[in-house]
Image (cartoon, rainbow, N blue to C red; front, side):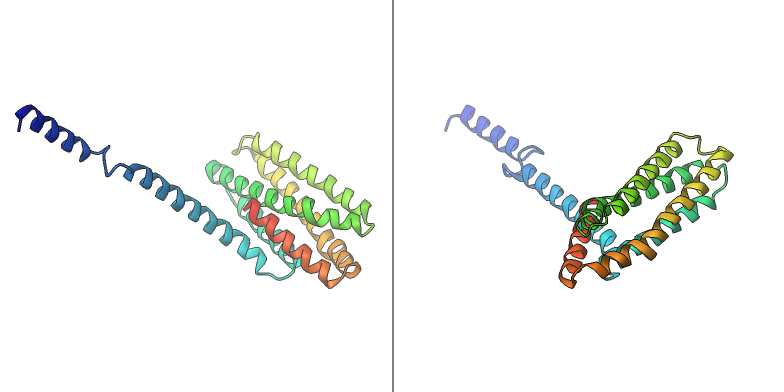
Length: 200
């Protein structure tokens, strides 16, 4: 055998064994494996986040649990000191995420159901209040987190969310549930859980 052929063959063999030649598809396989792990982790996170709400029972109980959870985050934020700006920013981000997820389920499932049950004025009033929530979030996100005004506005925001939640829990949700069939109630529960899972 020609020594040049043997040398070329040995070189080619060593190239196949280097970091970029792991059996041809190993890099692609590793990338796909990594993507699958990321997808599974995200799915697990979504199930954990939505599972806490969905475990509460019907849609009204689930949304009530979310009200309580977000008010708890507000209380943690209100307990911070002016020099805890990073913690304040993180808690505000959690509040924003929780309210976005919650509002999505209400605006895409519950409020349309209110309209179908001829409660259009209630739906419009609640949607208007969701707009006010977005205004509070915008103001707080753009405010200096160490400012004494920051906590004053957080307190005002919490009171607004608490009033909105109380009205839904004591008036709107019971009224709607009394006007719909058990079958529709179950369908709304399923759709609220699905919407919550999408936004988790």
